[in-house]
Amino acid sequence: TLGVTVYDFNDPFFGALIKQIQIQAHEHNYSLLLAGFLNRIPDEQDLQSLHKHALDGLIVIGTDLNAEWLNNFRNMPVARIGHGGPGEQSVRVTVDENQTAGLILDHLIATGRKRLMYISANLPAHRIRQQAFEKAASTRNIELLTEQFSGRDAFEAGGQLVSLRRDADALICATDQVAMGALHALHEAGVSVPEEMAVTGFDDIPTAAQFIPPITTICQPLKEMVRQAFGAVIDSVPPKTVYLYGELTVRQTA
Image (cartoon, rainbow, N blue to C red; front, top):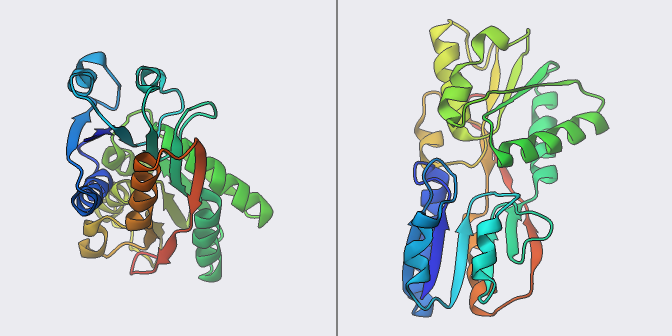
């Protein structure tokens, strides 16, 4: 039996990961025990079910740079899909943020965009992604404006951008949900996409392709991420970080 903890049940990207974990569990004859956190904040009450069972390992879905709650699970192998703190005793499987930031910037630059703005919610994963974009922009001699909204809701963060555009001609959104909020706001303001404003997302959640207009985004290698994390737990792999490449999916927003 493996425990699975999820930082946000409302995040569709996390839901897609859970599906792949369930597929791996069936293939390897494991059962799963699912637990989650309210508002992405770990609480002991949320973890009680995990302590009541004899787990063989733990898979964590989401980024946390200060996961002290994991100290209670030192007696078992742990894998995190996402970013973790430097001293975390887990195998961390994550997309290569530097590689994917380069893919997006090179695409926007190639299509003639010159004034780029990164927008995000106030979440650790979004801040890490911002650092990657800032690094990629500096190596390309491109100015990158940034705006981080205080709320933690990704869709709302994207929707608050209209008055802060600062004459940008491309919005680089931390996730597809941020991009969807941005596209709604741009539509309400009468800004045409991609003619006046290019918009990119990240994650390639299912609704990204179905959105109007369909969103240009980064597709993370979900199946491989889960395969690596699942294998690390059942084989008790020592702590390390595994970086995987993403792919740029070009659609109509950029």
